[in-house]
Image: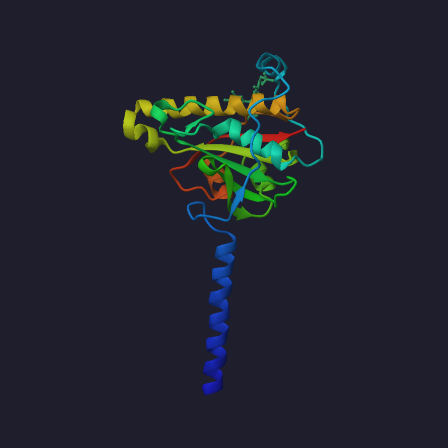
Length: 230
Ligand SMILES: Cc1cc2nc3c(=O)[nH]c(=O)nc-3n(C[C@H](O)[C@H](O)[C@H](O)COP(=O)(O)O)c2cc1C
């Protein structure tokens, strides 16, 4: 009887440890994940803004080759990086500096980065690990199976939390959030161009499906999916 109870207790303990470990590996978005510092972004480059604007085109097919962590750093900085240290203002304008946007990186083939979902942390210019494993196929399935998402080495998702801005501006704040997504998306587009990369803004997808794939909380709405590659 004692031996049976002991075996039963050991099995239950192992199960509990296993479930806990699995949960730890696939932690949800609101828990702080392992932090990965990104390389310092450049503040100057080879291409003029006029050239980037005139050359920019939506790109939907990519070479089967990785992008670098330097390129990821530059793209995320262009989207929401800190450009004014004292007041912590960011690369894209924000209504009343309420900063409703959250930027995620879905990595598949990034040098020096495991496949997974990462949240960009502007204040530290770092990535916080959200989910392990390559989620590009799942994301593609939620976006009308648009091939660009599956073939790009990395995908950026711009999401936002309305209440950060409507809390200050009431219902008008909703429009402001949509406007901000445009600013961040265009910054990414032009930054990609100047790095010799390409992207496209994808708006056709199932919101709740994308939320599930990325582990986003219900009040964090995905707006743009941007596959990035060469
Ligand atoms: C709000 C919005 C949503 C878009 N959604 C998609 C999309 O789901 N899939 C796609 O391939 N392109 C999408 N695009 C990109 C447009 O098709 C593209 O910008 C347009 O064809 C003009 O080409 P250009 O970007 O090269 O100037 C979207 C663009 C905008 C502004």
